[in-house]
Length: 166
Image (cartoon, rainbow, N blue to C red; front, top):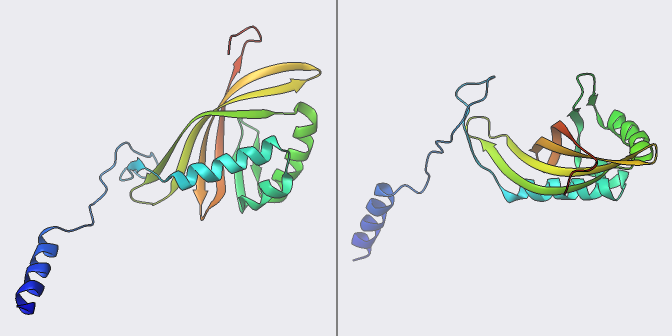
């Protein structure tokens, strides 16, 4: 009887593989075979902690949440930061200059089916104080989360008129 149960279990398992191939959607110009699927909320949690650390001006926490080879592609063509030391120096100056505060209003984790790269795309409302005047912007950020750390991100910015309703 044990042999029959064992054979039945093997046949049932073989006929119902538990591993499904991830088909995904979309494309990536650098690898046209790359497709994307919904990622893990673990990536969202890392990004939320990262933004909280920025809002709290906690440089030590920010540095602990990013890779040594962090790359930040800012909204301006010449605004590229590479490495923790350069990012820390930038943030120390920028926090004093404009006192930015972010509020995340949506986020979506996604993962490459070929590369396995984990990303998050998120929308942020950002208030900054420039020369005593509060300005508002919308930041859309694509961030790669690698080994639980922020490894790279791209910032896309749209200015919001001062009289715009929130």
